[in-house]
Amino acid sequence: MSERTTDKTVSPAIQVRGLVNRLGDLTVHDGLDLEIPAGTTVGLVGGSGAGKTVLLRTLLALREPQAGSVRLFGQEMVGVGEAELRRRRRRIGMLFQHGALFGGLTVLENIALPLREHTALSGAVIEELALIKLKMAGLPPSAAGLYSDELSGGMIKRAALARALIMDPDILFLDEPTAGLDPVNAAAFDELIRELSELLGLTVVMVTHDLDALWQITHQVVFLGRGRVLAQGPVAEMSQSEIPEVADYFSDRRKQEAS
Ligand SMILES: Nc1ncnc2c1ncn2[C@@H]1O[C@H](COP(=O)(O)OP(=O)(O)OP(=O)(O)O)[C@@H](O)[C@H]1O
Image 1 (cartoon, protein in one colour):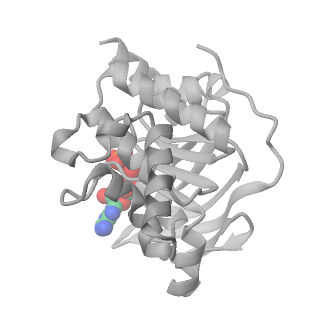
Image 2: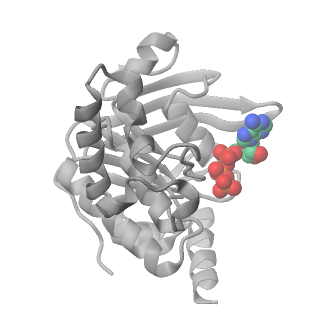
C-alpha cells in the first residue's frame, strides 16, 4: 500500500475556527480548529460519537453551531441567510451514508435532479450532462432507465456519486461511502473516488472506518476526539501516533480487519 502525496497544498479549501457544537447537555465540538488544503483528500476518523457526522453537517451548514467560524474557499458558512447558503452549497457535493436515491425516479432522473432544481437548462442538455456523469461514475448507459430497487449496492453508490457531482462541485463530502459494500466493490469505489478527485481537482472529506481507504486514497487523516482535532497528517504518520486515542484506534481497526 502506498501513501498518496499532493503538491496542491496552497490555499485552504476548508477553514474552521473555534467551532462549538452542543446537542442537549453534550458538547460534541469544543473549540475545534481545522484546515484542509484545496485539492486534498482527507479521511475524517475518530471513535463512535466523536462528532464526525455533526462536523460534516456543520460544514454543509445543515446545522448552526453555538460558536465558531466555517469558511469554504474563504466564504463564511455560519450565520448566512438561506438563499445565500443555497448558492454556496452548489460548490459542494454530498454523498450521504444511506446514499439514497429517490425510489420513484430513474437513475438518470436522480442524477439530473439538482440541475432541474438549480438551473434553467433545457431538458435535452440536462439529460446529456446527466449521462456524462453516469458514465464518469462507471455505470453503463443501460443503467440510466433503471429504478433503485433494480440496482446492486455498488450501482446505487455510483449513481449517488454521479448525482453529487452533477453541479461540478469543488468539494465532495462523503459519509462512510463504502459502508455495506463487499471488499471488492468497496475497493473499486475507493479507486473511482481517487480517479475522479484527481481528474476534477476536488477537495474530498470522507468519514470512513475503512483502513484500506485511508491508505489507498487519502492524503491526510483528521482524527477527532475530546471535541477537537487530536491529530492530522498522512496515514503513515498517524498510524504510528503516540496519542493514546489515535494509537488505540489504529490498533483496534487492524485487529478488526484481521479477524
Ligand atoms: N440530533 C441529535 N440530538 C442529540 N444528540 C445527537 C444528535 N445527533 C448526534 N448526537 C450526538 O452527538 C454525538 C456525535 O454524533 P456523530 O453522529 O457526529 O458521531 P460520529 O463521530 O459520526 O459517530 P459514528 O462513528 O458512531 O457514526 C453523539 O454522542 C451523538 O449521540
